[in-house]
Amino acid sequence: MTAPGQTLGTYDDADDIDDTTAYARPDNLEMPWQRLNPRIVLAALLRALVRLVPAALGWLLFNTDNDIARYTVYALAALAVLSPLNQALTYLKVRYRLLGNELQHTTGLLVRKSHRVPVHRIRAVDITAPLSSRLLGLVVLQVGTGGNSYTGDGTVALPGLPRAVALQMRSALLRAAGPEVTSSIDPHLEDGDADIVQHLQWRWIVYSMLGGWLIGGPLTVIGSVFGMVSLVGGEGWVGERLSGFIDRVPWGAWAGATLVLAVVIGAVAGAVVFAEAWWGYRLVRESGDRFQATRGLLTTRSFTADQERLRGVTVSQSPAMRLLRGARITPVMTGVTLQQTMTETAALAPTTTRDVAIRLANTLLGRPVLDDTVGSPWGSLIAHPRAARRRAIARYLIAIAVLAALVGTGVTARWWPAGLLTIPALLVPLGVIAGAGYYRALGHLLQEEYLYLRRGFFSRRTDVLQVRGINGAHVSQSLIQRMLGLASITVTTAAGEQGYTGMDLALPDATALAAALTGERLESGASTST
Image (cartoon, rainbow, N blue to C red; front, side, top):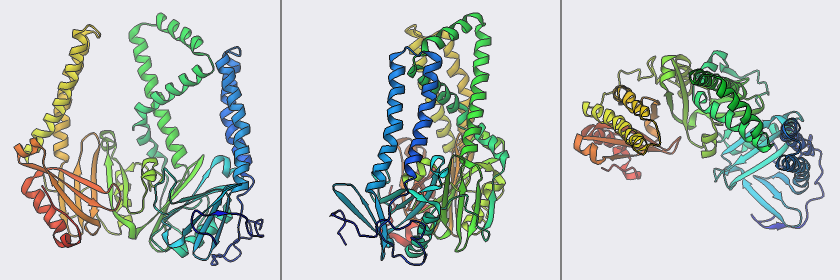
C-alpha cells in the first residue's frame, strides 16, 4: 500500500474483475482494483456530435464559402474525435478500489498518482446522470471530503460507473461514513418504502416564467443566436433582413413587437429551464430523518439532507412571487459546498406556492416554525424604528439621483436625447414605494429555539435560524446608522451562507439580541462587538 501522492509502478493482478460482481457483499468494503466502464467512450462521442451538428447545419445553410465557419466546423469535428480518445485514455489510466476503511483512486499511465480518501473523512457522495451517460446505463459518482470543489482538492470523481455498481458503492460508503454525510441517488431509482413529502406540481412553472428568466431569457437566447450566426458567417445575411424589416415598420410598432417578443422568449426560456431542472421532482423522507430530493430531465440530480445537519431555512420572495402567493425555501445546512450553492444542486424544492413552502419548512425542521404569513407562529416579528424607514427611502432616492446625474451628463454632452430625463423622474415614486415596502418588511424575533430575521423589498427574505447553530454575533454601525441610532447585526453559523444579517435595528435592541445569542457561549469563541 502506498502513501498519499506516491507513484505506483504496477497494479494488482485482479485489475479486470467484472464490475457487476464487485459488490457481491454490500456490507464488505474490500474490493479489488476496478476500471471505469468502457462505454464512457461512446458517451463522449454522443456529446461531441451534439456540439457538431448545429454548427455543421449552420455552415451549410448560411455560407459554405466562409473560411471562419468552415474552420469552426473542422475544429468541432476534430473535437468529436479527440473527446472519445481522451475518454479512452481515462479508461486506461483510472483505477479505483475500496480497501479497509479507504477509497483509493489512481490516475496516470507512465507516472501513476494515488489518492487515498479515509472513509471517515467523506462528507458527500453524489450521483448524477447526464443524458449522454444515462442513455448508456452509466452514472457519475463523486465523493468529496469538503475540500475546494473548484480545484478538485478532496474530491474523487468516477465518471463512468454502471448504475447498479454506483448505487451499491454509495450504500457501502454511507454505512461506513456515518449519518453526517450528504448523499445523492439516481432519481429513477424507485424506493417503495420512502415516504413522499412532496411531488411536482406543474402550476409552479408560472413562477419560473415570471422570474429572473423573464429578463435573462431574451438576453441569453439573442446572444446565443447571434454568436452562432456570427460563428458560421451569417451575420451579414441576418443584418440585411433585420434592417429591411425595421425600415418598413413604424418605430412604435417595432418597439412594441420587440417588447412582446422579449416577454415571450423570457417566459418560454423560464418554462424550459424549469421543465429540464425539475422534471420528475419528488421529495421523500427516508429512514433516519433523511430527506431526498430527486429531479432532472437531461441531467438527473439528487440531493439528500439529514435533519441533524439542518440549522434552519431561508424563505425568499420577489414582488411577483408575493403577488402570486409564491415562495422559495432554501435549507440552511452544514456540509454544503460553495459549488452546490452556486449551481443550486443542493436545492430541495423549486419556487412553490407559499403554503407548500411553509409546510416543507415545518416538515424539514420537524416542528412548526413558520405560520401562514411566513412569520413566527409565536406572534409578529418586532418592528424596527421609524428612522429605518427614512434610511430605506433615502437609499433608493440616492440611487435614482445618481442615475439622474449620469443621464443629465449624457444629455448635456448631446450623447442622448433629453427625453431620457423623464426616466429618473418616473422612478422617484417607485423609489419611495420601494423604501416604504422595505421598511415594512424589516423585523426580527428571538423566540425559544429560533431566531427570525426579515428584510428586503425586491428580494424579500426571511431567515429562520436555530439558536444552537449560531456561534457568534457582530453588531455594526455605519456613519448614517450612528446618526440615526440604528445598527445591523450579523449572526454567524457553520451552515448555509455562514453569515445572516438583520438590518437597521435600534442600537439597544441589536446589542441586547447579540448578548442573548452569545452570552452563554462567549467562553467558546463567540463575539459581540460594535
